[in-house]
Image 1 (cartoon, one colour):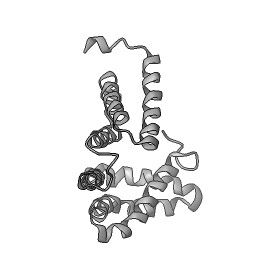
Image 2 (spheres, one colour):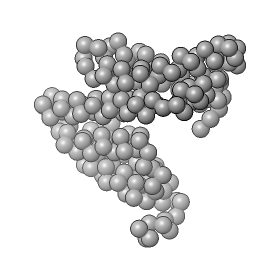
Image 3 (tube, one colour):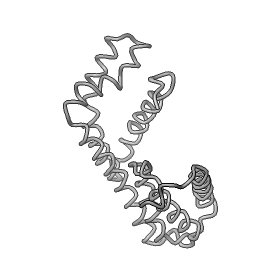
Length: 181
């Protein structure tokens, strides 16, 4: 769309700050109107900049869309419980797809070792290489995590390993790891 090509950077900054403010207000005040405005704003941001079309962006946009049907005044009603289940299904779907898309030779021969290489700074290169071989289990772990988080009886067993996986990924991106953005 040609009219969206010439939007100044200041508009993007204003939309970003407005989005953050609305997310904060929606969490604190739990008003349906705020969620409606936030969802509309997210759609505008996606139309303005296709770089926002990332998995995290459409995941949260979809979640805010579902919150349009949530009654903040009656959180105990069945619709609220159903939305929570749909949120869980979205998260599990992301883990499932993330695991499946890693089942390829590039991941097993390159990416798994790249993920573990920073450990060589602290424990030696042979240890990092061994971890790289073990990282070949990550795709299977993510698929298992998807199913483990889906069911109430298994959720508690998968929560801590999932959190540890994300903590390592965050650490990997810091100066203690790859210092990579």
